[in-house]
Structures are given as C-alpha cells and as structure tokens.
Length: 98
Image (cartoon, rainbow, N blue to C red; front, top):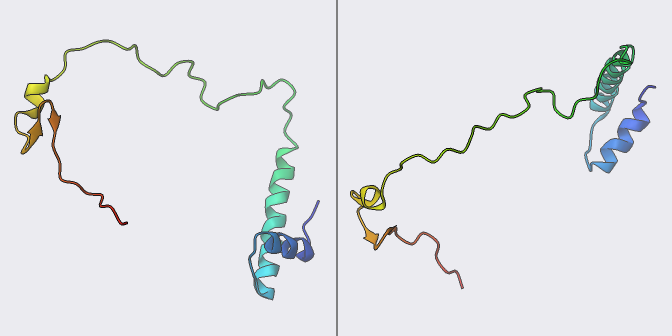
C-alpha cells in the first residue's frame, strides 16, 4: 500500500491544514516511509506470542496499605501564619467577576 499526493491532500483537508507543493511532496515521501516500516513489522512471526494488555509484566506494583503514625493537626498548624480551628487559612485568590 502506498500513499499518493492526492491522499495527503485529502488528509490535510480533513485536518484543516494547508501545505504548499514542496510540503505535500515531503509528506507523501514521509508517509510512504512510515507505511513501509509498518509493512516490515508484518514480516515478524507472531504465531506463538501471547497478546499483552501492557508491555510491563509486573503483576502488582502497588505496596500494601499500612497505617503509620502521622503528624498531628496541632503540629502541622504550629507554624501556620493564619489558621481557623484545625484548618489553614489562606487569602482569597479567586475573585467574583460579575
């Protein structure tokens, strides 16, 4: 299968792109190179190859969820410039534009 200049023009039209003649010729050559590479992949014998859902064969990459001691609320808020009960208080950054 090969791509013609007319095919590239149609693809460009669908993508709402405009190319000059040199660009059309360059893209035609490049797309044909890509297709020839893909055709080369078809030469591989994949009869005994199991399909993968992911290229990484790790079965479980997550660690166990272990409860560990954490910083208390009081300790976290100890150096806060402004606080309200057990929350950090910050200046308003989104203003109403109505």
